Length: 274
Image (cartoon, rainbow, N blue to C red):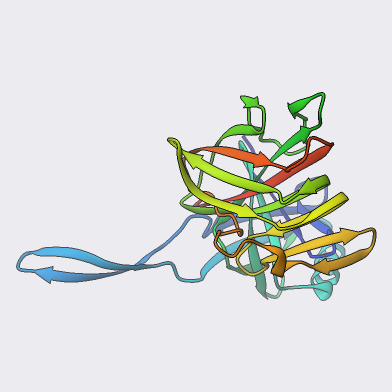
């Protein structure tokens, strides 16, 4: 299977590296991981005491099939943004990492084509996006609706869904609740034990609530049309509320607090080494 790479900036503009666009990638390195390990020595035996993952570099050559025209296209794209870009990597599935584009060497002619060396700082694990949508009302409780992401969860009954979370560290979530709510709750269960939960003290019709647990972007907000309101103070402070999901088999249990129409969406960001 041919690997595919492309960049995406905060505006959603993409820069795709493939033959049809006139850009080829060669000699890529740094897609995996590298740990800095510290050890203590006990006689002839070493014991690992600390493991750090340094900021990784991804390096590759870019071959510009359209010559300086293609080179200028990339420069124009990077003039908009060079930090917090998403680098997408597709093989049998699609993942992305946040990167800073820190270096693009001067071009040289190789076999009749221009070539530049690029260096990116990798700032996160490889992130895989997954999603689940549950719809509830008084006639149809727990129906699972299709969604556009390539991953889905099955075995949905009532207000519960069985999910399998992958990755190497707890997955971040972004939760969106729309419709009628009355002190909604979410519980994450494993083997009949509650691992984490959220609860909001809010009764509202036609609501849209968004709760983000992404590490550098945690918030709880309510939206009325274009009006955004911070409702951080309406959470049950005895609960975690910013939901992180352990990489294992889990049961998600959501209760809107009302029998009226409500839709629950959860976007899950798994963190993988490669």
